Length: 63
Image 1 (cartoon, helix red, strand yellow):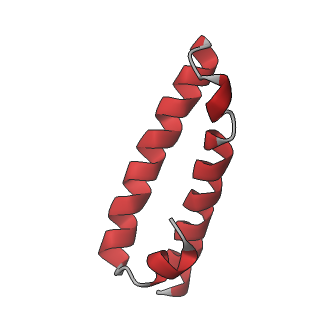
Image 2 (cartoon, rainbow, N blue to C red):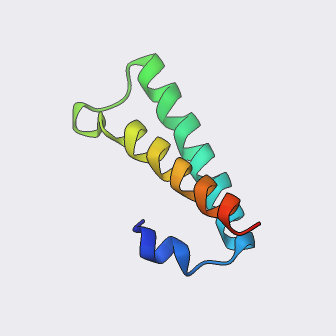
């Protein structure tokens, strides 16, 4: 999700999105550990990790 779209969300929506991202990150980690992560998705863990950082930054700025 783009930064502009994240900035338009409320703090509660950001927290809900953060929970979804953490679940997605966990699923990707498990796929990688078991060798089930397709070669076309090797960049997904990095994308999710960066988006988690963006959401955390925005949550910190709204306090």
